[in-house]
Length: 80
Ligand code: FES
Image (cartoon, rainbow, N blue to C red):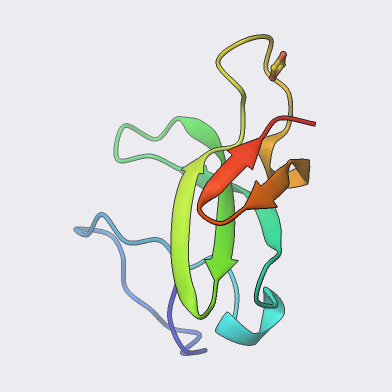
Protein backbone atom coordinates (compact mmCIF):
# COMPACT_ATOMS: atom_id res chain seq x y z
CA UNK A 1 0.00 0.00 0.00
CA UNK A 2 1.21 3.51 -0.64
CA UNK A 3 -0.13 7.02 -0.64
CA UNK A 4 -1.49 6.92 -4.16
CA UNK A 5 1.45 6.82 -6.52
CA UNK A 6 0.15 4.91 -9.55
CA UNK A 7 3.49 3.86 -11.03
CA UNK A 8 4.70 2.08 -7.93
CA UNK A 9 7.43 -0.40 -8.90
CA UNK A 10 7.05 -3.58 -6.87
CA UNK A 11 8.82 -6.07 -9.09
CA UNK A 12 11.64 -6.71 -6.62
CA UNK A 13 9.77 -5.81 -3.48
CA UNK A 14 7.59 -7.57 -0.98
CA UNK A 15 5.27 -4.54 -1.15
CA UNK A 16 2.20 -4.57 -3.35
CA UNK A 17 0.02 -1.66 -4.35
CA UNK A 18 -3.59 -2.44 -3.50
CA UNK A 19 -5.39 0.87 -3.00
CA UNK A 20 -5.20 4.39 -1.67
CA UNK A 21 -4.87 4.70 2.10
CA UNK A 22 -8.14 6.66 2.13
CA UNK A 23 -10.04 3.72 0.63
CA UNK A 24 -9.97 1.75 3.88
CA UNK A 25 -11.56 3.73 6.69
CA UNK A 26 -10.36 3.29 10.26
CA UNK A 27 -11.89 0.23 11.89
CA UNK A 28 -12.70 -1.44 8.56
CA UNK A 29 -11.06 -3.82 6.13
CA UNK A 30 -11.05 -4.78 2.50
CA UNK A 31 -10.01 -7.85 0.57
CA UNK A 32 -7.64 -7.85 -2.37
CA UNK A 33 -6.18 -10.35 -4.78
CA UNK A 34 -2.43 -9.99 -5.23
CA UNK A 35 0.33 -11.86 -7.04
CA UNK A 36 2.99 -13.39 -4.85
CA UNK A 37 6.67 -13.36 -5.77
CA UNK A 38 6.05 -16.86 -7.12
CA UNK A 39 3.33 -15.37 -9.40
CA UNK A 40 0.56 -17.17 -7.54
CA UNK A 41 -2.72 -15.46 -6.68
CA UNK A 42 -3.29 -14.74 -3.01
CA UNK A 43 -6.36 -13.27 -1.34
CA UNK A 44 -5.44 -10.90 1.46
CA UNK A 45 -7.40 -8.87 3.97
CA UNK A 46 -6.09 -5.40 4.85
CA UNK A 47 -7.26 -3.78 8.08
CA UNK A 48 -7.00 -0.14 9.14
CA UNK A 49 -6.63 -0.01 12.91
CA UNK A 50 -6.54 3.65 13.90
CA UNK A 51 -4.39 4.57 10.90
CA UNK A 52 -2.06 1.57 11.08
CA UNK A 53 -2.52 -0.97 8.30
CA UNK A 54 -2.20 -4.72 8.72
CA UNK A 55 -2.49 -7.46 6.13
CA UNK A 56 -3.15 -11.14 6.50
CA UNK A 57 -4.59 -13.96 4.46
CA UNK A 58 -8.25 -13.39 3.71
CA UNK A 59 -8.98 -17.07 4.32
CA UNK A 60 -9.73 -18.35 7.79
CA UNK A 61 -7.64 -21.42 8.62
CA UNK A 62 -10.78 -23.30 9.71
CA UNK A 63 -12.85 -23.48 6.53
CA UNK A 64 -11.72 -20.49 4.51
CA UNK A 65 -14.18 -17.88 5.79
CA UNK A 66 -13.49 -14.34 4.48
CA UNK A 67 -11.63 -12.62 7.32
CA UNK A 68 -12.04 -9.22 5.64
CA UNK A 69 -15.74 -9.56 6.56
CA UNK A 70 -14.94 -10.59 10.11
CA UNK A 71 -15.59 -8.67 13.31
CA UNK A 72 -12.86 -6.52 14.82
CA UNK A 73 -12.29 -6.25 18.57
CA UNK A 74 -9.13 -4.20 19.00
CA UNK A 75 -6.51 -6.02 16.96
CA UNK A 76 -8.37 -9.33 16.95
CA UNK A 77 -10.51 -10.37 14.01
CA UNK A 78 -13.19 -13.00 14.45
CA UNK A 79 -14.25 -14.97 11.42
CA UNK A 80 -17.76 -14.16 10.22
S1 FES B 1 -14.32 -20.64 8.58
FE1 FES B 1 -14.93 -21.50 10.45
S2 FES B 1 -14.21 -20.12 11.96
FE2 FES B 1 -13.58 -19.27 10.07
